Length: 406
Image (cartoon, rainbow, N blue to C red; front, side, top):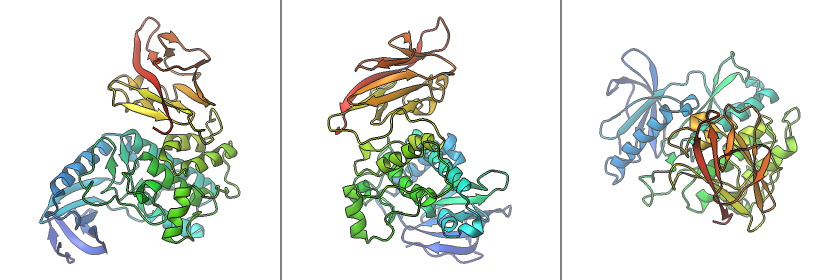
């Protein structure tokens, strides 16, 4: 076990100020760099250098952080300043001065002035942050109010900047976690998704489930399951018996009934039937849903978009708007030519349609022809865009269908 460091001790080029916390995973300190800057230092206990997956964990952390730093995710995640190894792994991050966790903000509403307007803005920022993470193939996997930090900023309408923290055991959807099969996946009581409890690998839909619980707290009348025991919690979420959200008074969401339906669908026991974080964000920003969310009927088709390689796919179980952020993970090139949104996919009964969206920079093509109005989709249809009047199709996506149960 790693030795606890004392105030005044050196770790690499950092001087320990004080210990902040200690748990089974890591000991955390306030420390200072050579230039006097305060940093948040984590000394890992798990994995230790004796763990068989230690070396791969370090590589995984480097790859995860590189993915965050090279994308818009960095706006929503606290900054990592460095890492080093001295008998165990150390990582250090920006010190979030004067910050509050969302837990504190929810418990101290009067002190922190978390008005209905600010709650709605924070909900929009949270879902935007998750959508950005998911676009990069990253699953937070341990989302909860304690891991959402609010930094006071009087220059913005919410009054706080929102940052996600504690992503040491977050996942990349295209790279298996080094600890898979060695131990379980991290999560927290009262915020476990059904996948966590079934021992499955958490996915982006798991974050959506947990985000829906947090939105109950931000916009509704509190956590819908907080009074349950662990066994009762497990039973309720796996049976999909969570009560619908009741919005707080003065929470002004356009198309509130549609949003309430979307939150309820986000808490479905089957991850394949949940909307995306982008769907939640669109709804919170008042974007019209093409159809009011409903649970898909048995046998209803799941629409799949395939991009520049067979493994670059996106499944849609719910009507949704498709734009640059959706297609970025599907295409090697040309995703930047898409507008946000570019076209609308609508599910009705057991059919899907595609419709153009007014005001896009470039026209949408369906099987090589400019899309005008609404058209029914068939397996094998090709959706793309045209950069110029005489230009060729760019950023092509292929449509196929699968049963929802797949």
